[in-house]
Length: 319
Image (cartoon, rainbow, N blue to C red; front, side, top):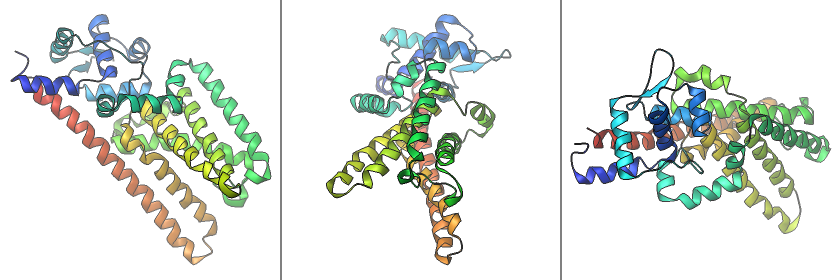
């Protein structure tokens, strides 16, 4: 007997409605013990998503002495249940946010489409990296113009436009990794995440986000009603940066929405450091930094609450 009662069966089917997790379970059931790279290639999921889902499935998937992942007894029973219920793996628009995937699949498909994360997941690493270099190169050329030289300044007046764009991109990539570590609390995986700092798909997606940010700033500088066009571009930029963190770093989508805000607060704090000669800037720096840290803790609380609810439902349903 797999369930204590029928109502728990219904609850379980709703909680396990994650194409990514189902894909991992089916792959391990069919191929047996598999290394991480084999699992990544076989499921087509991103590195961050696999780490996230393996952590969520730790009661069903274990790692042996050969560093291979395999199903334990609970995992085998789980796959048997999925086959009995007729669940089929489908990772075309698999997101780490199972709740949104279950309740609002159309919304996630739209976000995945406008943020291009679905495209970068399908591209080979070399192609994704080429896209990142192309977009970054275009941003460098745009920033050479003096009009855009102040659009993303990290080092005050001491850095030239090309350096600004480079630092913005690298800082955004690095901060996305630190944000995911802070939110997930997976400090033991710090080394692995840092090694994946420049994952081509993530880098390409962040490049698009930075390009949209520059576009929004350029539109905002226009006169009359044209500056209002910056509002939808800012929303587009927010979804792009958030979804890239969600797809490629394994953070739930809802808390990942805090990523652009938190990054902006830390950016403003660094920017204020160049004006510390003014007493008021001391309070600005502290205030921006405090808001950034507070945003991180709020994101972590939301992320853990969602994962705890999903994990708790699975634990309650399975004997």
